[in-house]
Image (cartoon, rainbow, N blue to C red; front, side, top):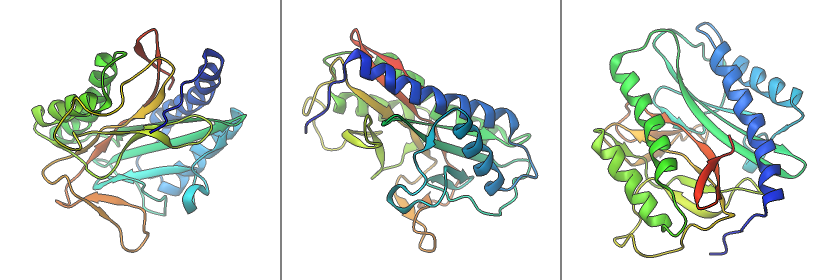
Length: 251
């Protein structure tokens, strides 16, 4: 596995792309409301991103048709925007990618629509808290498998399970590259595999299921991913760079 090491000037270019995503997610979090359609959310995100001088990186990527992944309720990732109307009590995952001058940004949040249940608040908090925990414990010399195990243990400790067969990823001049960063230990030995080094840039994205960690990809749209238990899910993501031995958030 050849994991790129980025120069400080490259990391700053990735930060610019990442900040465009962060600003767009913040805008959507403040403005998405009950009564909107998922297509309206998508257009809002695409227009805002373009006004920042960024290209929506997801649009056309691997054939994805839209600028924003809108993952509603039981959909955990890769939801395709459609005419579905948001209503109070929904929870919505919003995942956005950007590209500026050949460098990529990527992040995601899950937001409440109106007043949501205590159970859904805890579900969203798990993905957000897991992400913050992971960022906080990262240090140079740690193995990626050790990070994955720590993420898994944190999620399970909250009473949930991590989605399997999907993971975080490296990012740079392409939207996805090495390393892969699962939210669970893949294999039995966390002391194996590549170590985290200064200059690495990657996305951490906890994907939280309630009971069953196995994914089911929608047979109709070929994109939307749900948990096999059919229950609601949540997803958070940040793009980080390893600088001076620690993780620095770019989004």
